[in-house]
Length: 291
Image 1 (cartoon, rainbow, N blue to C red):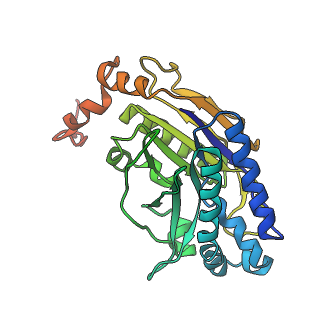
Image 2: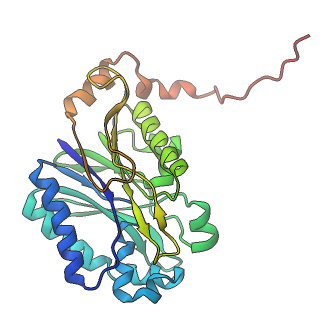
Image 3: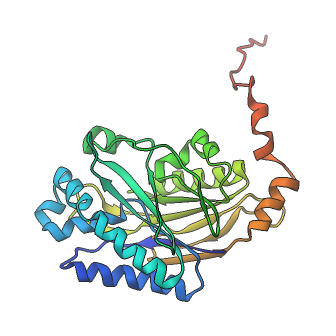
């Protein structure tokens, strides 16, 4: 398959038609370049809050629910585009209202109209301490026509056990938004580590640029990147493709499921198969005094 990951700038929208045109152009461009799987970023859906007015978009609490109210329409749009272009789309995540507090929800949309839902598991300090966004549903493996796909939303990619829960996946999408270069590199390092441990491919997308109308987003730094185990059949750097920081557009890489299967079965190392050998070796060091 060909994977496309987005470095996606947010817009202050003046109409729903403007949003439709924007997403249609992005999906159409990726499809024209042969992409089979498109990965949009974390909180990329927050631009929908501007349709309720800039006062709402700039209010942390009101913006959550303004976006949540638009998500069903956004899903319908993505379903139509996925079918028209015969692509799988990880739609930009956004808040989804629940009986408690909103969750941060991404959706995997298939060409035949199915929607797989994945919520972020572990909240960043801003989400939990200021914004009041909470963790949602369990991690899921989506068995699709192009392979087994999982989603680790941004901060989730920095936790090895969450990655291990998706060890059956061929591709793990990592939608992200980070307000500093340090954040970008944390998520990228996590994405590369998960590719190493699971001997799979990870696809990181990012919000880029200014959205000063949003107290939650402000200015975002990031880039698209597609990562792999530095092993048989893959680049020795572990990088299939990586874009320049904060340059909007798609980043592409071609991935063969056979290559993933081969490295898992007969790689130079077998991290995925040897994972369980850590049991009983919890990493606790003995405190030994040397004289």
